[in-house]
Length: 312
Ligand code: NAP
Image (cartoon, rainbow, N blue to C red; front, side):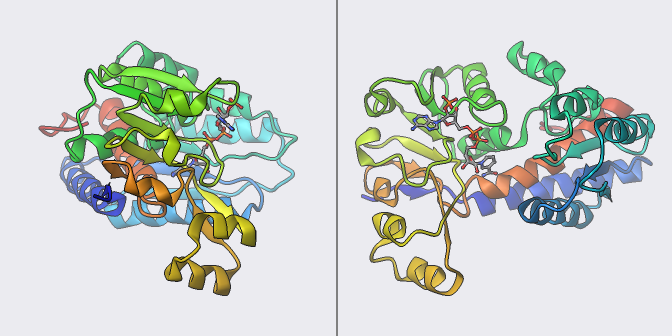
């Protein structure tokens, strides 16, 4: 039996509706959550992401503003901008879109964001809060993965979770969240030996690698839940055929656009897994939804607005 598809669009729209109603209640109490997005220079993919974030804020009633320093901006100029955003009370969330230009000290910039406004959850203070299970701001994509599991009634406690990838943005925080939810967690990376063997232990397998279709069926225990975080642009014909041969819809996209989006999990895994997130339409939609949720949460925590029942 093919795997159940975990519909990220549906889960993201549930979360967005919850956030919108929370924003409405906060506005009635005189608080409008505010998000500032900083986009330095011109980076086409980043511009698309930022547009999505600003549009989504507007749809949910969150105040948003965009700052677009020039590509040549210095670390000092960006530190000034962050200091100004830190000071402004109507700004609850500050998001610095990565990557920053090479002349900028990215770590210094991310360290300068007030941890209470760090809606990306990348500040070491929030990393520490997460690892010691204290309330803080959690990175959006990992938080979204936990929402997918919880809202799909996939048990985490006591189960074997294997995370492939150890980035600060996805791999490490999702491993920490799974551990906090009482899974037995293994984190793999490029130096892991016998990777398929380790992955086959997983009841929950998270692939956050950045390699199209690397996780084939021999990495997956029958019935496992597979979370595919990868977002890879496939432009090579042979690579396309390895992943999507015989798929007319993808063929049409590849023919007209010259590229398709592929996850880190090979489509053949659908025949083995119990449940799986598709790409596109799985983890991706949760990332922006959780950014909105984090902005509202930051506003609530920082401005002392009581939490609605069942709030994150
Ligand atoms: P990253 O920083 O490049 O990290 C990739 C990780 O994969 C590293 O830990 C690396 O190991 C590991 N890795 C690479 N090749 C491997 C191999 N052959 N075997 C085992 N491990 C290997 O990437 P990231 O930022 O975490 O992103 C991962 C993927 O998720 C990308 O496709 C990205 O586009 C996608 N993503 C999606 C969303 C979303 O909203 N859906 C959000 C963020 C990221 P080492 O540490 O040993 O190098």
